[in-house]
Structures are given as structure tokens and as C-alpha cells.
Length: 207
Image 1 (cartoon, rainbow, N blue to C red):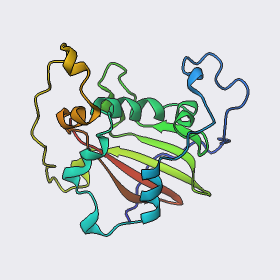
Image 2 (image 1 turned 180 degrees about the vertical axis):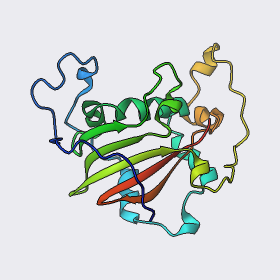
Image 3 (image 1 turned 45 degrees about the horizontal axis):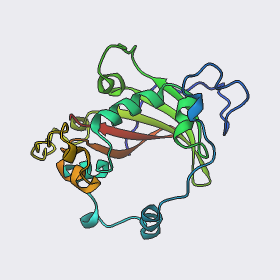
Image 4 (image 1 turned 60 degrees about the horizontal axis):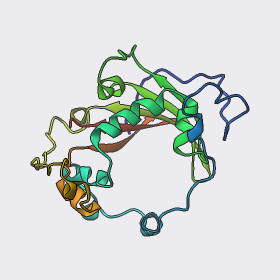
């Protein structure tokens, strides 16, 4: 564990579950707030039941992109990492039963810059429940080179996509779309410690 020196979150914050009256007034995304969550998928239950896996069975950095095969593109991940980190109410949309607070800390952001450039190098302070335990987290977004000693992550070869203008392409199965999609997204997690506040580093690789 390494000591990370970063600004601290607002000490006067009053995190809480759910939305208080008026918190979503005037926000265009208010219609997406739904505290009733869908049942947990069976494959997630199975993974939780298995628990932590030995290193030989874990995904390597080169294969981390396979986690985004379910219709999630690197561009979507970049947008989400930035958008949800800048406001508590947005962060709560992600997990209404666990997320309490979010605060962005970093340099002034150029709103015209690509989404990835906006969040890499910054820190998102969040309060959230992990199971029944309340966690005070500092999520740092860093480039893979910062934690991989400069070792380049191998990029799978790009695959050509079918012509989407054809009727057959529009009707192709989800399995076919997964096979055709370039696997470009990369995200890794590493632990660090910030005083009493646990820090989580998220590595964002280039697409």
C-alpha cells in the first residue's frame, strides 16, 4: 500500500441514501431516478458465490477488455466515468441502494476536451456502502503506465465491421455483434491508502 497525498472531500458534507425532496428539481436526468432495483442476474450471484479467485484464473491486463463485451463501448465508459463523478445525484443513479455522495477533485476541466482527458488525472471522492460497511473512497483515474511500469498492454487486432446499412446486418444476433466488436476498452483496479480514506485507482487505457 502506498501513501497518496490528495485534497480531501468537503468535511461538512452530509451524505444520505436516496433523494431528499427538491434534490432532482430542474435536472434533465430526474426521470431516470428509480430506487427500485432489478433482481441480481444469476451469473453475478454465481461469481459472488465463487469468491476471490487464484491468480492463474484471473483476467490479465491484456484480456480486461473482454469485460465490456455486453454492448458497452470504450466511448460509453469514458462518458460515464466523467459524467457520474461530477455530481452526487448522478452518482446515485448508478446504485440507489449504496451510493451516498460524490465530489470531483482535480484541475479545471476543459469542457470541450474528450471525455477521457477530462477524468484522467483527477480524483472522485465518494461515500458508499460496500455490503453493510460504509466506505469513504477516493477513486483516482490514472493512465496504465503509472502502475504498470511502462509495460504496454497488448491490443487485440481490429476487426472489420459488417455494413450496417444492410437489412441482414441490422438483424444479426447479439453473439455476432460481440464477435465483430473491437475489444478496446481497458480498466484495472489497484489499491492505495489515503490516511483513513481508502483509495481506489482506476486505470484508463487508450482505445
